[in-house]
Length: 274
Length: 238
Image (cartoon, rainbow over all chains, first blue to last red):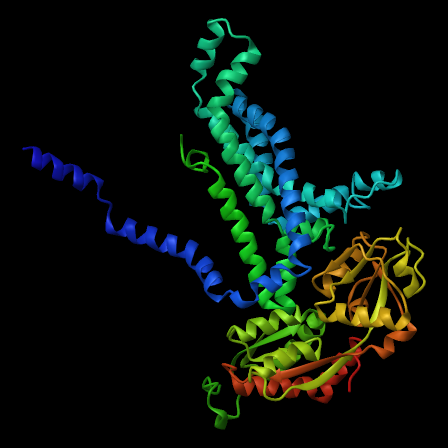
């Protein structure tokens, strides 16, 4: 009898061949381009290209701006996520409008986002024209790179944190409050540990998206070495003149992304629940 | 009605099928016109023009893109394709020179090349790795001007866009780009520009899927009609 039950369990666990085939193809589509990148990399020129005058400034700028964008996204995105999580109790129209506002940057082509940012903050923009009058110019600055990155990357963080907030069990907070914990104590000792992994996962996604940002950045901020030319832009430009260098720049981006993922514990990975 | 002809049969004399033309970004408008005229002459042929940075297009060809014709904005890009044996016979069909471009009304009060060195102005140039940028570097050196660019764009149309939006006070683009743009921008001719000439080569590609139509399109661009269209767009015709 027990053998019979075991085989039934096995049958229940085994996935249909079509699902496995689909998953295999999906994985191949995700992995093979990166394998090709590694296979075709001009390994004999890597040291020369990485040591050249393109990679250093672009990498430093990319890491710096992506880190700053993640900090800004945390400072602004966590409160927005809290509001978004509470909005489930709101009437339909404002609730959907709020959700759409956070979703739009996710589905918009980044170049369009860049144009929109120019029309708002450019020298002839809705707010930018007014800023220009008092001598503040935003395009072509490193600050513009950060603004473009926050625009495209913050929604990833907002949704990750909102998800964590929704799945957190509010009764634990209530219990803590009932047992005499102050609001600050509840937040620090109960809420934060509950949503911490979600916030971390969101921050990783946000950082990774900011690091890879291209379209909104080149449209809104421009492309000047050391100021606005991030690693993805340098890689695209290198493709025009020195494809080997473009491949090496892509490898550097890949290595940074892998380092970020590996530096975090499994339970902080997007999609993995603690 | 004649039966649809086989594009691989040269004895037929009648061209058919599609011909894919990879052209430099600065050729966008004139090649759209040329493609339309060519299709009018050869109703069986569908011309597909794909524009981009010359270097990026050259890379696509080296990577095996199924293209029939390549028209580059300088000879360097064509040379990389020719070295790989993929462009046996390249012919220079047009030349182009640079011009200063400013937004309508010239808010920065730009009068000449020297103004590109004014740090308070927003200046957009092409990156030196693309043809328009290489020409810009040469021109600025020739004029003894040290530019203070705020952005180095990936192709000439991106520079034009920055000026068009008023986000740059001045930029260096081809004179044909100024001609093709609307009244939102104004061109300022530069005396030294005639000494820095970009030469545009065109070639039917060795691995063209439709070799007869490719040869015919190249011949059309080099013909009197092609030269007239290029001249009208502001190109120099050798």
